Length: 123
Image 1 (cartoon, helix red, strand yellow):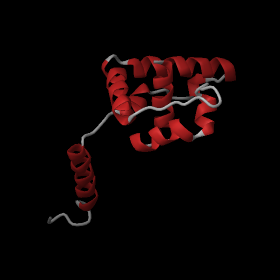
Image 2: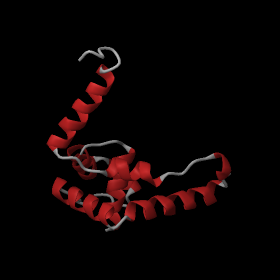
Image 3: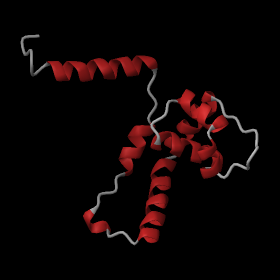
Image 4: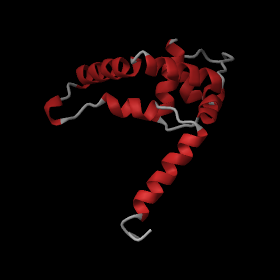
């Protein structure tokens, strides 16, 4: 579970697709080091597993707890003054949301039409 959460977090930090994440977990030494995977370990993860754990994290609202825990730890370590900063776990949650292929097309067309509307109001 710890490895899966770490992989999901790295995926969001690096803005990777599921396929890119699978490739990074199997062959990227920096990811192995950061995820505390022993040198020479044969680790693999599949896209279906990523989708499953992403759904579990979102369903049980672990994303907010994970974000809060990481934020608190970083603030203590860095002695950051938080009254000037905004911490919003909703950004992490929206980034982890999974869209179907149709959902991606719908979101893309919607953004395109919003950008088109001011230029061509007659359409």
